[in-house]
Length: 364
Image (cartoon, rainbow, N blue to C red; front, side, top):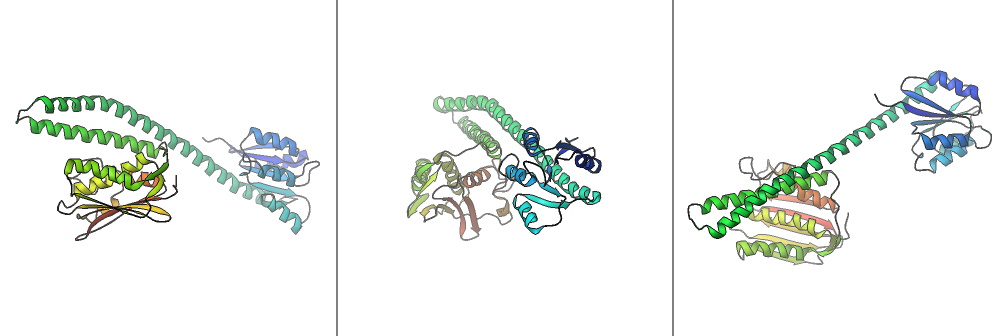
């Protein structure tokens, strides 16, 4: 069971504290008494309270002064305050009470039923807050365990994968048998794809665990795209990619993470687009943001569009997919990590355009 909700009761008259005990005592509540403001401040340093019930009239530090001190501390400014007073209704005094942080006023002699009902509301709120904190702690533990599992898995998988890729490189270099060459090429492609999957799983674990922090600097997004385009042209030849630049394309970003986003979008456009239509990469800077639009001649089926950025989904059917369906999910998460986003428009006959944008000054 969860710990009892602690309620701080402050009154300089012992009989009043005893009366509160009689009305409010219950198994899921722990009443902690103080007979002065200074003693209450000491208790506030030692315990976590879900509610404070303060008598307004006390010698030395009165209830209003105590409330002001509570509101001035980050440790105690969230605690709801219920004032008790023996004085008759006074609008100015009531206004002062609310100004110092009161959530309600009750006037003596107290109605036990009303007091119990009001306190019960705050006990329930404190219980819900306690449960949310416990759920958050559990979630954080699970995320950390998941990240550790992914790290161990990646380490254990990378060793045999490295051996496989090294062996295929050796065979490609020294074995020229025409019968085995296609098999060696398939092994190399499969090994490379598995390495990419392992990297994506690690990225997802770090993103969901909040452990991927961008190292931002001023960077030209056109230059990042040019490097990716040059890399693809070295493999596919000139003419498959058209790079355009408009305006000031410098923004505050993490060049490594954003290059991962751009490489994913450009690589997907080359892989899934119409080979007869060049992939157009348009980098454009405005006053507030820099955008990169990647367009190709292919179209994405309408039923797949709403799920493109979901984890473990892809823009291809299940029978066509070759990966885990994490590439676009990670790309969008990285764009959002920069304070930006990715949007997609796809129509039959006009093609598909993925547009990633980031704020010029950086949103991280």
